[in-house]
Image 1: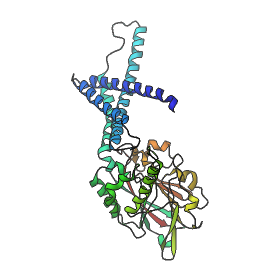
Image 2: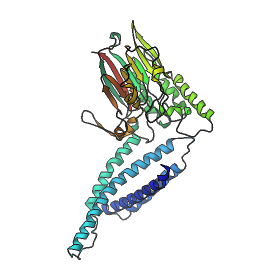
Image 3: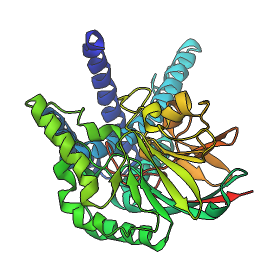
Image 4: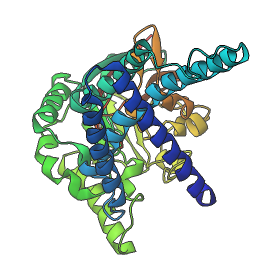
Length: 410
C-alpha cells in the first residue's frame, strides 16, 4: 500500500480539484446571481480547510474523537454530492466535445467549438447532488439517534418447552465515545426497558478505544433494568484498544482491564470465552459468550473453550461480535449453535431498507451477513445494526437498532 500512496494521493487530489471546478461551473450556470458562485466557493474552501486541518492534526494516541467524526461527516456530505455533479457535468462536456468535432468535420464555423453549458443540465446535476447531501445531513443531525425497535420471531422444533416464548433484547456497538446527546440516549434506554424481555444481551464495542469514553454515560446505562434471566455481554474489536498508539504495553493493558470492568459498572456480566446455563424449571439452555473473532480482525474468541461443559444436544445461544465468525466457523460447527447474535457491521450506517422490497448497503460486498436474520439449516445468526455510530457521525437509511427476538417452539 505504501509504495502506491503518493499515486493515490495524487489521483485523489486531481479528482477533488476537478470536482471543485465542475461544481463551481454548475452553480454559476444554474444561478443568475453573479456573487452566488463565489459565496459557494468561499464556503467550500473553508470546509476543505477544516477537513484538512482535522486530518493533519489527528492524534493516533487518542484515536477517533468528535472532531474527527465531524471532519469525516463533512468530507462525505461535501465530496459525494460534488462527485455526482462532476459525473453529470463531465458527461455534458463529452457531448459538447464530440458535437464540436462533428461541426468541425461538417465545416460549420458559425458556432464555437464548445457550446455554452445548458442551464438545464446544471440544474439537474445540482438536484441529483441534493439527494445525498440532504440524506447525509439528516443522518448527521437526526438519523444517528433515530432508534428503531426491530422484532423477530424464530421457531425451533428442539427449543425446550419451558423456553417457548422467551424474549431477548439485543443491543450492540454502543461506541460511547461518539455519543453526544443525553436526551436521545435516555430515550433509547427507556425503549430497552419498555420491551420487558426475559434477558438482555450486549454484543460488543462499548467504546471506540478508551475506557474513559463511557465514564459520562455510566449512570445512564446503569438504568437498563435487569430482567429475570439477567444481562450479559461480550467484547468487540474496538474494546481491545488496537487502533491507536499507546505509550507502553502497560498503558494498553490497563485500558483493556478498565474496559472489561465497565461492564461490571453498568451491571452486565461480561462473558470471556465462557458459558452459563439459563434454567426454567427442570430445563435449561446454554448461553455462550466468546471474545472477538473476526475474519479480518482480532481472533481472541475461542469457541471450544467457551463451550466446555455444553452438550451437543443443548439448545445454544452464542454471542459473538463479528458475524464473519458465524460465516467461517459457527454455521457448520458439529456442536449445532442454534442462534448467534452479532453486530459489528453497523450496516455501514448507510444504505436503503424498504421492508419486503429492497435492502442494500455497500457493506454487503464485504460481509454476507450484515443486518438482520440469516439462516443455514435452522442455524440462525442475527446481525444487529448497532446502537451508536463510528467513523461517519451519522446514519443514513440504516437506523440504530434495539432488537427483540422471541423464541418459539414449533
